[in-house]
Image (cartoon, rainbow over all chains, first blue to last red; front, top):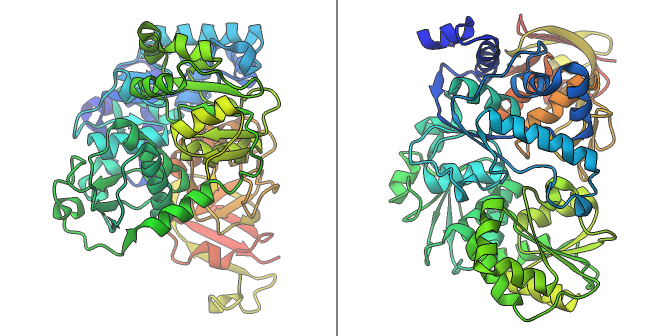
Length: 425
Length: 150
């Protein structure tokens, strides 16, 4: 791989042993990919903190948080002292909500260990956003900005909706990028990877958050990792819709980028979205595809009695919390059912200020932060049946926890929370 | 899997065949092959504590890849792919070597942090040549895979 003089100096130890270890990993990773060189990035999102008993024991035995960062964020078996990060870096969601230890089944000791790990991570200069949606709370890449992001739903949003450029990175590559401001120049950093290779035409209006989730789930299943060019978009989708669309598509498939002609930044026209590629195949999405996808997402749903309603995958926007608060105001959550809504802590702050937290809590629901049920594997005790307005969560929860899942609109989910039953079709 | 994919496979029991590819992670290792035609998920797909596939509908569900030569199409799923196989290496349950067809950021990083030799870009698709149980020697530095049919 070609390295600049600055990169060679980092590799040779000019920035200290941690930067040298980071550059060593990026070279090994870049060569594995077949990348020709590295690209500069000053925008990183990833996971740094330690949230498991294994990590706690590793830290105790091997040399504290520096040992955890050395091994799990730099792939260095030699423990190196970690300097403050150079790139603007935001922390992703965790394996639990540290503010709700009881619901998460967390011991006080694990919370104490996590808090220490969080404080250390913040001291390094990593922003403790603790969300799968950093683009909601202070990290909004600009078009063409090279990024090093983890989290599939954030990656597809960054590439497709914002025009930022990132591959689906992992814990070690983002750790190295934080210290060096470099990442391999491969994949979605390069124009040719970003162009569409196949087409989808919408035969029906795709308008609600539910519509976009169903369409995304159908699309991912078909295209897998390929970049689709979508035509026939009517009403322009907003953030919650595109967030749900990308998350669904990156769950049923591995979609990291899509083009909505007339909406997303690299698709002013169909020609621009293909960039000279000839589509290998074109399909149409209509009423039959929508109905089949809804049936497939609901395939695990059998029992109508709902134990748990989970909203906020990906993390809810303030607009979605406002909607949920309006739907539930003056009603009560059924005594046999729990309602948990997940959002970044910064947005919960706004929800509290606006009175939505009180409305939701007065009804018997909870606003949770930092995690979700798929990440934490935490659901209310005894949960067998869940109701969700997220196709991604409906994809993962039955697989991870063996529960039944019902998928529908936010209003149907709030009704299920209050009635204790799933009554939508 | 059929015996008719390449002529070299006729009557090769006990004999060896050689395929060539590109080094992804350097090193030399050998072991018993574990072959799947389905992509592998990291987070939610494997359990690093015992080195097994746990994905619900995966054809390898319940099988161990620890110390084996894993032959598979590529990686899928969450960005936690590398972290899971990184944990597997630390816990002593990682594969001995990796042979795969489709390059992605996930599989590149995950194989790198496993420290086990890995190869891709083969002259012959390893999924058509290698069967579970074959003895496979991976010399990533020389770009050579030697397969001995059990």
